[in-house]
Image (cartoon, rainbow over the protein chains, first blue to last red):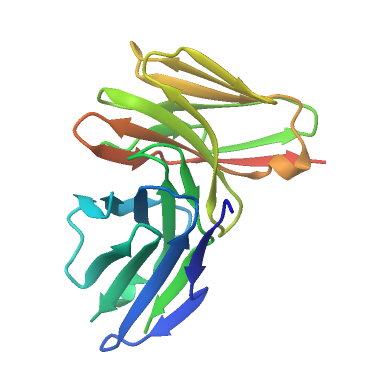
Length: 112
Length: 110
């Protein structure tokens, strides 16, 4: 199985809501990533987990909270988001830290 | 910003022609990767080239790396309409930093 799955595909949330994005891989990869991508821009790295430990946190606001419950799962908890947080959120995994990455299809998030 | 710069920003070619896109970066790297993204979808990994390598091939793709000039190029030979996508370089820098370049939008006209 060479697939990274993400749920939900689309999410609309108000600024006071709490929601979570989920990502799963069954390739035995030890590194997992969250990216944010605005339209017509490159992905921006948010967080990296390596061997279930947070290894990179790119100064992301605390309203985004990552969680890695086990080596196959990665969550991104969202709380009190702003309209400018609306974007495509991409999850990826790789066999080793910052190696070739496999991407999920993304969650399209709209904050109203 | 450490983000890599790609040129051209956009490229339009006829099917069967070759497409070349370039990536430049600012600080030392461990490796450089190329990815493709079809509109609004997840990215697909194409090639990874390590800092001690100069050239790599994969099917119709050829990647070169010149660490003295801090630049890389991606060549797609005999392009097809299905190659229409955005192409990004991504650099793994010493100091645990990773950045995607600005991207090249490629259109292949049938």
